[in-house]
Image (spheres, rainbow, N blue to C red):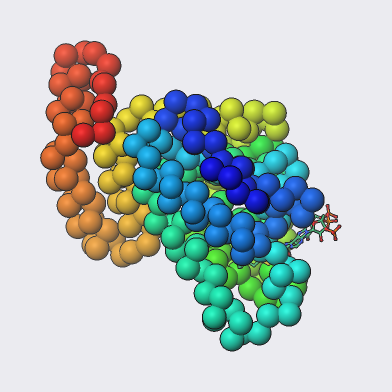
Length: 259
Ligand code: HXC
């Protein structure tokens, strides 16, 4: 797959695809074209049975320093309404396969929001997270106020959103924003390790479980519990459920086929 602002490797490892944001001179600032490409690449990978887990990364200096301020600077509210840029974000959020953000350097504004739109975040110890929009007279628009608040609680989210300050990877970990912090040279390896572990599971169970965890994140408890129950029942319609449980009883490793 050829794109201008991202690099896509559908066979990065067995069952694992890699998408690299690739505007290094602009610290991977997320312009509209890049987001459109990301949406297209994710939709394509989501359709490939061979791909079971997707990693999104940037480079050592930046995951992404936010939406492209130069592109947004002169926009009017009506321009923004017509461009409807969040439609791409909604599509990314609908990706069925698990997405791991492998973050090094800046993950700011839309960059932090993109990492939070992924399902898990592995960070290098040099990673810096923040929602600095307030410093340029705007506020987060791609889910920052909602996802950050759910992830780290009201007091912490309020402070980050209202001051625009950055936090390091260790603090992000202690607040519950990210999964793990590793030395800079290992962040992609660590994300790959996690992706490979998930890729061994039943793709059907993974898809339904991802949907269900997201439901907990996005809805009230009662609605989430009913949704989870329905998806739990659905896993019993798969051959993988039979295989997984037989393998447990027979004390052998399960061979999942995605059926
Ligand atoms: C456009 C950006 C950019 C951005 C960096 N650059 N961030 N261009 N949009 N968000 C460009 C710079 O203009 C510069 O290009 C080059 O990348 C290197 O950046 P420097 O500022 O020279 O690097 P440094 O001094 O190391 O500072 C790094 C930084 C700073 C702290 C990350 O660049 C910064 O504060 N960036 C903006 C962060 C931000 O406010 N993000 C939120 C955006 S709003 P030139 O050509 O000038 O050398 C947002 C809304 C989301 O994300 C909601 C909608 C999706």
